[in-house]
Length: 398
Image 1 (cartoon, one colour):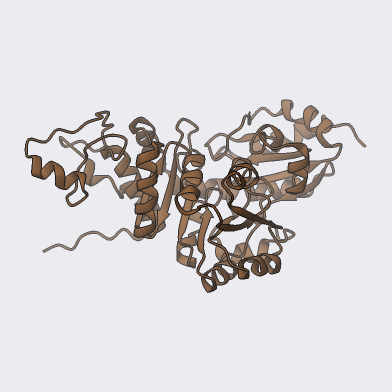
Image 2 (cartoon, one colour):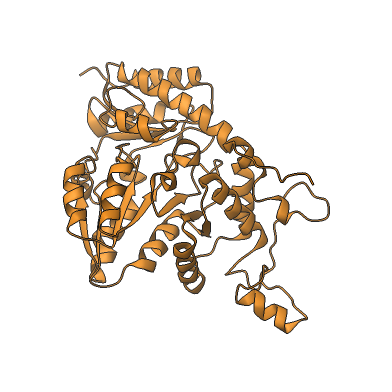
């Protein structure tokens, strides 16, 4: 008997995993199944499916064949036991946190997470009497001391949005395990192509699938991967609270993921070249990209990442006034609140990732008001650099 194919390379998994089981009528592509309900003549079989004793679907808020194919593909890429999906990245984050946290619990995390995540830490969790300890992202000793005091969850994001700070995952996971804490890592910026926190000991990882996984800026979605027992609890919370991924978005995300490795390799390369160009430009004051040897997180990133990602950020001389002059001149970049797409996207955190935060909150998170977040697309990098150069020329000499 021929052995079952074992696709060990991520590029092959991106194309094939999760799909064959859902194909129908000889089709080579997973169908988009819009049915809300699923019919059963045998009531005992129906009950077994409803109780999870047999495979199948009973109601769209719970499971769906197209959604299942998307989940299985991500699960394979992250080498996870299980995963479940959501209507958005923030739904994945909030549902996961609320699954495990109750009044009186304590969570340790970092200051400069994505703005929506930060709002959960600053506003929503304190409202249910969860103690939140925000640590300086690169102060590992401080984080270790806070974790050592005891916590239910250690929540990390690396590289961070938008300053691309890097957290030493192996070090922090070891400390969390010593006190029995769950470790949750937002892996959106890195993607499974560049970083696999589960292999370093994390319990759960989260992706905003809207970003690099989908890659085409046309579908919202989120996903959580990890230990089966933990994911089952998250799924139960999600199925009752209703933040399910719709089948059309699942189809678009599934289709986008077929080119994930190709896109990420190109975006890694483009971001590195753009970062090096900006680092040498006289009108740029700071460049934040873990691939640069000058970056404080570079050595850690080299240990835990296979590529440095398609995201970078930078500050220009003249602050926000200069940004307002420079950004409209860009020809090959959408000025929009998104990232991870095949097209380059650019914008300041105050109108994108951290629009919900006050200037004081952004300052506390180490985000300059004049920062520019740049998501490198798959365009020819020479065109991207020329575009940046001509746009920067509009900034007056200081």
